[in-house]
Image (cartoon, rainbow, N blue to C red):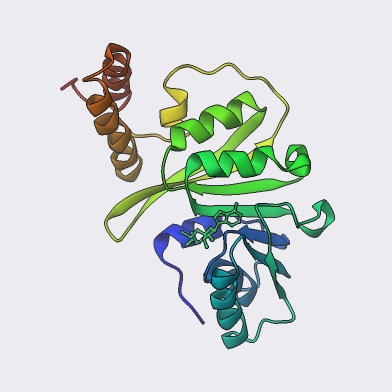
Length: 220
Ligand SMILES: C[S@@+](CC[C@H](N)C(=O)[O-])C[C@H]1O[C@@H](n2cnc3c(N)ncnc32)[C@H](O)[C@@H]1O
């Protein structure tokens, strides 16, 4: 059976026991195979917009003899996946803006029974902004390091609340950088990008300074 790296392992840890899962942008299908092989999910849909990754996913599913549990499906986001087929939806390894677009295009995303496990490779702050503006709540957030890169994973559900949030929330989310060194490393990534942007815009400098304070660090 395939072993997951710590990034996909963290995504897997957010999936509910017994959930029917859809993995959007599955590529190699490692995640749905691991979830079904380990008895977390009774069934899974491994979906991708491109046929080539689905072929690679098919090989993984066949090698694990999970053809009866995992359906491979060509789909742009969730367009070809019906609401009554899934409980938990994983979207990992894509940019934050693309993840936000996929959720925005799905009418049943606003069903509070559904949960999203999201792992943005870039622009996580933009994803958080759009989720909060759209009435989604971040139930959990954690970080991990894989191949010396730091990643964040979000567990998200629609609540319909238009909660107000401050300017730091898209960068901090539910992370605790003062208490958790991996969270700190992730937020430090935001700080260094903001400091680069600050050369052209003073408001980024102020944000970077406030984030440093939230991390318990002296401003640089
Ligand atoms: C970098 S891979 C990530 C694979 C896996 N989810 C992971 O995290 O390791 C991104 C995959 O997303 C697929 N993809 C990109 N846009 C998509 C969309 N709109 N709907 C479904 N899949 C998409 C690509 O074809 C590619 O296979």
